Amino acid sequence: MRLAKAAAAAAVILLFPFAARAQDASEKEIERYRAMISDPFSNPGFLAVDRGEILWGEKRGSKNVSLEGCDLGLGAGKLEGAFAQLPRFFPDSGRVMDLEQRLLWCMQNLQGLDTKDVVARRFSGPGKASDMEDLVAFIANKSNGMKIDVQLKHPKEQEMAAVGEALFYRRGGVMDFSCATCHADEGKRIRLQGLPNLSKPGKQPQETMGTWPTYRVSQGALRTMQHRLWDCYRQQRWPVPEYGSDTITALTVFLQKQAMGGEIAVPSIKR
Amino acid sequence: MNTTSRLAAFVLTAGVIAGFPLTAKAQTTTTKVDPALVETYLQATFGKAPPEWQARIKPDDTLATCNLHRNDVPSAEADKIVAREMAKVVFPADGKLLGDWKEGQKIANNGRGGQFSDDDKTISGGNCYACHQMEKAEVSYGTLGPSLTSYGKDRKFDPVEAKNAFAKIYDSQAVVACSNMPRFGANKVLSEQQIKDIVAFLFNPESPINK
Image (tube, rainbow over all chains, first blue to last red; front, side, top):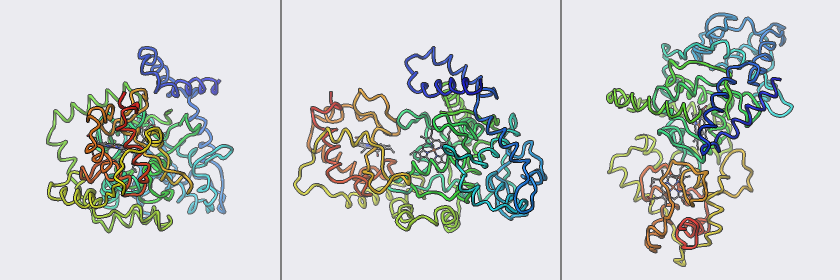
């Protein structure tokens, strides 16, 4: 049942770019698609949520403990609203971390888990599940209905936001692209894909950031912001960004700052 | 994001800008960060990439200026950039600017090349449709750049205009400082022959661009 509905959703989304001529019909489809996103029985992203819940409680690593003792910023094991405030500064590590960096830290330090394999499976593929995607789906979902409230009090958090902004405008690669080449104007598109303007705070960054992690129909997988930015750097013709590294976190802090106050509704479904 | 919500978002943003012009302006002013600090972030993220890839994200003098001003360069700096980039343009030795428009059509449609997911043997395309409308029959075009429909015809197939187009594609910043358009020839994305083929796509009267 889940899968049948998911397939229908997939068809709707894949057809969507070509539906411009059939405006009325597509408007109805969009409505239907909207309703589906929030329905746990038709959004395959919720399968990742379920898997993530199991992983969260599973005893692993040399210390044979679960992640339930992991502090995501609001106290050990406290999940409700934690994602809404990430990335943030963690005094125990002395670093600003996004959810994925924090989870790796907890796996290493709390569970005594060798994270090499987890990192190797950071992005799922056919026959290759990703613990990270599942955990992020589960944890982010616990902030549903809440507003993005990224922390900017600590000097390190402020540094991240400022560096993230500079990185957003930094051009390079054989095409001379920066994030701003594709995401700093209103109503632009590349081929047929609409591009959100992320350069100004407000509705567009709010709707964008409030809907990640998302189930990507075109990829048949739940994807996190780490994957989105990895893919954008690919399109930008830059080198492969290191997973869970500072440039990605800085950009995420900057984007969350632009999206401040946006409502979280995840996992969403996207093209 | 879908069309409806994007439109709504657009209307809302427009409202915000109209309502608070000063706030909108204040938000676009550059926050100063130490360039050395930015380098440490880039090192942490791209430091393991092969040296030739790292070289690609080291800004040359032109990009360094564009980055500093977020492309909104003062006119004196803009003049320097245009002069510097114009000096990089190498026109064909035999003076022939128009290649094969059918090849040019393929190159304009090809968005491959230069990505870390491509292999060494990938031949780069111009990816022109990512940003420009060109022939009318192609509906899948981006809007980051102006429409190039009827480009040659509108310019009466003037050879001087064709030469300008060759320069524009070879090095967009030889014409407009800090243009968002790639510098295809100067950055060695496209060969001289490929650029000639694209110029033919724009300027051959038989090309679907001019139909």
